[in-house]
Figure 1 (cartoon, rainbow, N blue to C red):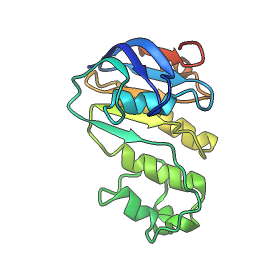
Figure 2: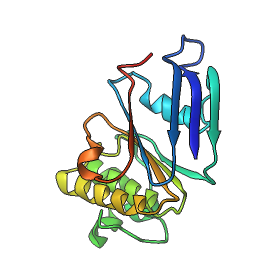
Figure 3: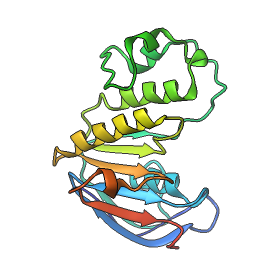
Figure 4: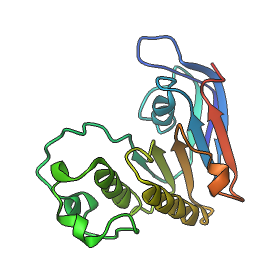
Length: 189
């Protein structure tokens, strides 16, 4: 469903961060990308999705669509909408928020409440490929557990796959029986 052969990528105008990376991801599987800050984890995800050009190599993506949740940043933004506006009209909360959270203004919600609203909106999709970039940022233990449960349920469908970018996680511990391809960008170049 997603394959890369001899992939090289890096920031525009700079030497490639990684060269000759090959991988394959099929439905029902997870690609776990880990590495230190600045190692190119997010850039790899964007390159695999076709949102950033590769320096070399080939990428084949046969997924019919994807949903990408980038890292939550800009914590000081003052956007004139509520968490209900972020989640959208479907109002499915996936156990991440309670109805009382929905009226909170974006700029009054905590980082964790914002991240949970973004995740609730993210999980409302039926896209076959889900890409989560540091989804644990700002989440408490209970919210992390709920996201892990949602990912386990999603991966029960062999037509869906996940790319997970994370510093702190060991997905093999909470995704037993799921094929997990690990890429540690600190160990390759």
